[in-house]
Length: 166
Figure (cartoon, rainbow, N blue to C red):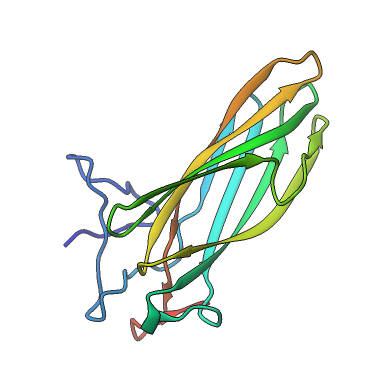
């Protein structure tokens, strides 16, 4: 058994993910760990939560909502052109999602501006991870990739150790 520590490393020295499972097979985490990355002056913050109301565990359908905040901390304007998500479930099944913009938009961020959006991710397992990249373009036409750090899709647990959407 491995454990996730919210403030500590998420991988053991051999690179394996550390997860502690409860008796019901659901990972025991105090909160879905978030990510916060800065690449080329663009900060991407991600947080996820389990949507118990719209999930159907008996049918192996688990829905997670995630919130993304993108902030231009650089000195030049940047426009988001596309996204690339890498989604892994608990069985290490990989799904890649590519497309233009985010939720139908192409945020054009001046220095200091932010864009926030919410979306969801369905899984067939009780937990997984998401990470990826956004492709941005500067006013001079230069394109660059911005990292979306790995974050967890995992139910939170209450003090009794049972899953909750918090």
